[in-house]
Image 1 (cartoon, rainbow, N blue to C red):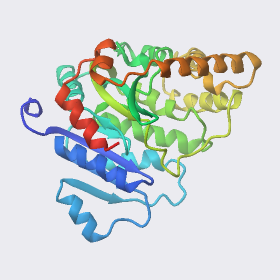
Image 2 (spheres, rainbow, N blue to C red):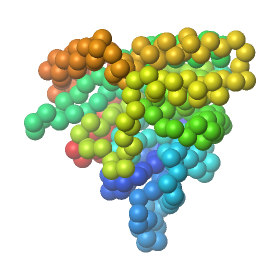
Image 3 (cartoon, rainbow, N blue to C red):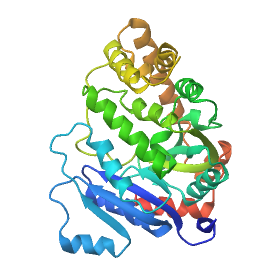
Length: 331
């Protein structure tokens, strides 16, 4: 396994952006130091000049300019464009201001090489935050811990609905499966163009249809909760019942070639896992209010010492690796 012994990991990192180009290029530079290929699809106007493109090309970054022309599903189209330019067997998509650890990437690649039926693999996620002038860390997506989805296609869908996390969006993938899932997602969203807060689940379930998935205990994904959101992020106004109704229609299209799949069973799982969308009853509003209070309580327990925090959460990590990641974020 050459990528385990060479300096750079044999993986393509796909980075797509709408704005915040300076932050995006910092992220691309980080990956260029540890991965064999980085592809940046940039929507921000004006696009980089020839001189600027040549400068980042020297650092091993492929730059692709993109014009959405108002296309509502440009986020997935940009990822598909980037994936189609990849020269590696494995790839991963990264947000423009977030990081995957070197150790986490290698651990996921090892799992993919060990099991040919594994389509994608992720690790554990934490968030980095600032409170006053100090940096703190919190755990993200508890359902990522111990995630193992290796049953039949239909049972993989049920498992994912019940143990929901945006696993597929942030996994290391076999390139062919990633392109397949992204293509199918675009087809579904184009068929029913209405966008809502649950659009991400279409890609998640399209991913389950491509093969098995799992997570590893290594710290893999560091979410940036300090940098303000990128301009251009879509704001959804619809909540409640109509969101779930549109999602069910899209899932019906996605699963139309499957026999005996129970969409109601999947929707029940989503109904439980996306309670923040359910604002159409007094009970749901009460539940959300209680969860917000719980978040405030959790924030009081945030840790500033990352070694202690990671050990308490039983995550595998490399101190030098983490130090490199935090420095690269320049927070």
